[in-house]
Image 1: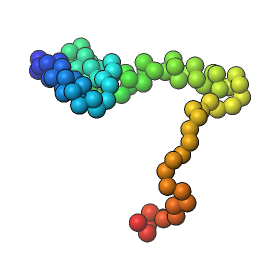
Image 2 (image 1 turned 30 degrees about the vertical axis):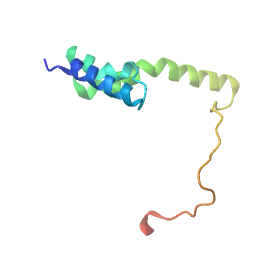
Image 3 (image 1 turned 90 degrees about the vertical axis):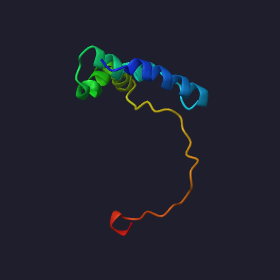
Image 4 (image 1 turned 180 degrees about the vertical axis):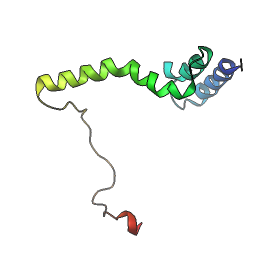
Length: 89
């Protein structure tokens, strides 16, 4: 079996040294699936299955209150940019 875990551990050290982004459990998912013999093309499906309960809970909360639940946000990008059709880009 290729040394995927060793490679990931070295990358985590590099990532942490640069403080590029925090590594979570999903970082190790592909390696774990490989060691378990799960085909790579099932990775996205397994990722989604693990989150379906949470997604369903969000839908149920939104239906119970009869409104969409969205995080508060404020757009801070450029204002009044003209729209250009794809054909003209």
